[in-house]
Length: 192
Image (cartoon, rainbow, N blue to C red; front, side):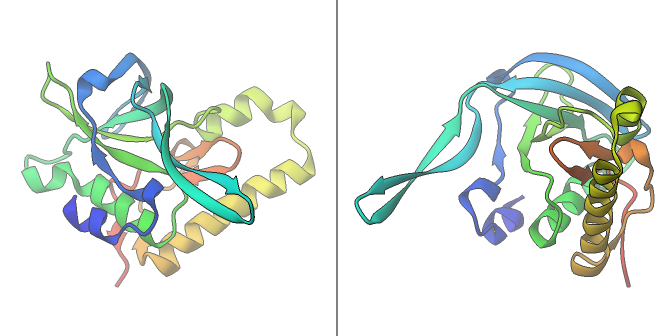
């Protein structure tokens, strides 16, 4: 985790340890092959930088969006190795620092189960498959092309800039918000 903190350029990209008691209203919203996904309210909130005008100068102030909705994903291992437990987190952080637009805020640990969870951006519309089921009749060619462009840009960045191969690419691993994000890099491999 320290490596990724040192490589972060922007204040908003710094990952942090998030105490589990600072997360509330935790609800299960999905189940994948390698873990469960939850929504939660982060009481401290997402980091942001506010710009304040002072005459002709901009003053930048660190701030937080109080009670932000975030997503949590269990960092469970598909094998019985401690190193595999954080593989997805490492893959996502490598892609985030090089290309991927999905915001990752940090890691927490469930006090009761002792499970580690990744804390990341909540996608209001869920997966692409869910989004298409709920909105197919309302999609225009323009919105469809925008979704495809976002997906292809994200995938190209993961392959070309971060030098990763996704290895589990399907509509359930594409998240929809104001744009499309590629997620679930647990099976990804370094491109040689």
